[in-house]
Length: 110
Image: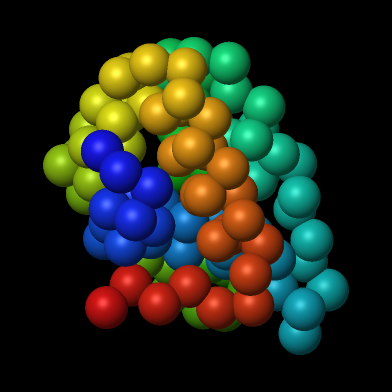
C-alpha cells in the first residue's frame, strides 16, 4: 500500500481519531502514553496490543471527557494490522501516520 493510500485510508483515520481523544486540552487530559504505545510497536502484534489497550480505556475516557468516542470496527482494526504485517516499512509507515494524526488538533475521518 502506498504512502498516499495509507494517509487517506479511512480505517487508519478512525484509529487515529480514537487515539486523538486521549488528548483533551479543555479537560487537561494528556494521555500521550496511549499514543506512544502505538508508535513504539515493533511488530503487528504489539500494534494490535496497543489498540486493544486504547479500546479498554474508552468507557473511562468517555466519562472523563464527556465526549463520545468513535470506536473502530473489527474491519478497521483488521485492515490496519494487515497493512502493518506487510513488512517493516509498512509497519513503520502506519504507526508513524497513526501517531502523527493522533497528535494533530483534529482528525477528519470523512
